[in-house]
Length: 286
Ligand code: AMP
Ligand code: ZN
Ligand code: FE
Ligand code: FE
Image 1: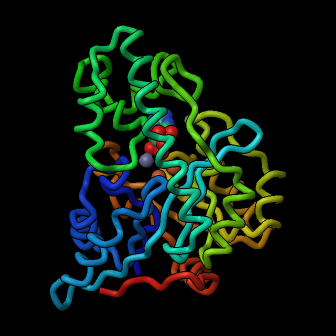
Image 2: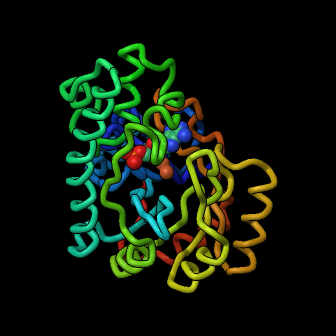
């Protein structure tokens, strides 16, 4: 079983359509893929249709999810949510709030970039983001198009888009304790995304991870491109201590990042632990 529990489509800052993501998952030999766009579930209908339309003999299970933008003690963090009831109103409202604020903030980030001399426009960013949940990676792509930086990754320097960088503007982010509650109340399972990704800025302490576990966190994403081996070992030990399952996932963004779909995967027993905790929705078996 090859299980990848973190992937983005162009419903947020990935470059594949949901249907292309499903095709890429089949091509990568995956048995299970999760769709986890930032603060949105708008990719679900197309992804579900694509899984259900797969020819016989090309089985793929789709786990519907989302990746929530959170902040605690001034530290930005991401919370993956799986198999929640997409209609549950309180959680739906919180996703909507963050999405709406992403537009306000993205316009301001573009203005900052312009003030700093980057020849990009809001129209360009709108074209790049299409109808997706707009984020800094779209603006990073605009900076690449304009020749300001060479790669999307280079745009995340303190000169431009990094957290607290010259062109960064804060957006609405949910308190993770509140987010864990919202996800559980919608029958979903919350997993801390890339908790040790130091290249993105400060990371949350083990003590706060322990408090999140006590508040209902289900798992930690351990095998991730942004974690080195000592970080993975430390997080695996912490998860065991706290009774959390661990996941491995690519955090695929299509051509916007270099990681390949299925480059990191989750063990079947950890996937089973996630399924056992979910009551809000079931995976879609194609
Ligand atoms: P936003 O959601 O608009 O705040 O942008 C955050 C997104 O930018 C994350 O989900 C990552 O995909 C991407 N990102 C953050 N830091 C980096 C980095 N250092 N290099 C590349 N991408 C990054
Ligand atoms: Zn992303
Ligand atoms: Fe993330
Ligand atoms: Fe992600």
